[in-house]
Length: 314
Image (cartoon, rainbow, N blue to C red):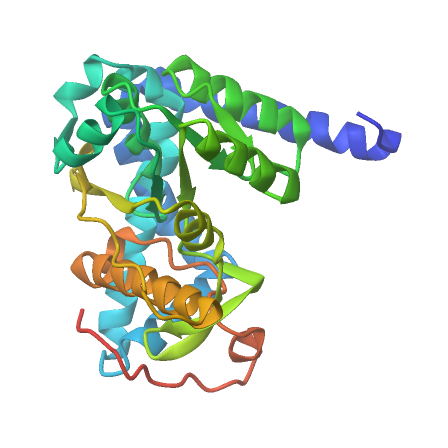
């Protein structure tokens, strides 16, 4: 690690705190850890700066909602995220085949058929429920899939996260970024599928409507699929009750047939964003609303929220 001594010291302190967090929640087990995390984050979440970001996002998507309704949704969001926090140190409880006790799977027939035929695909998802629960069913089904991830800022914590994923079988990971993108394209050319999250802002992405307002969105998943003539298959994790889940694979995203490649890409990315919108509206408390999904100007102090033209109801 080529970094100044004070940064290395900070990394070690953070890693020590991380180890304490993991040891504490692991000692509780997944069910008690999930409940404890929910209780903790319902209290701490509203004190964080991103609580305001989440409120702005919710007010934009649900302009007709009253303040008490938004407050309740925020509380339920922190409950869900707290469960995520408490569950992740306990992923040993869902190592295949133990995951069958907690994770039911729907709609997997098509993706299993593609795997048997040796055909790659582009798998997309978003930050719903506990998205780590997507991994165990994929591993048990033997999906030949390379998963992307974002490096943690602290390399010591990054090592711990990767080791934790390897414990339940998620060993084949590719970091996001230019080098990672080339690696993914190479995987597709060799018949290996790739999996990416596609619900966050990407500053150098393309602008497509998201709940009626343009949002910079990553075109990579759509571009890779369209170039290689592959299907884009969405999947989502849903929390049922406590630390139990349903993982659902959906029909492939419709890809544009417009002759103009730029417009075809934009239309396909728009279709992906619509799928994300639909999943958010189904269970808004299970999406992680703290991403600055739209232009940074709407998150400035004093900026008024603008209504969505594609709003749902809470």
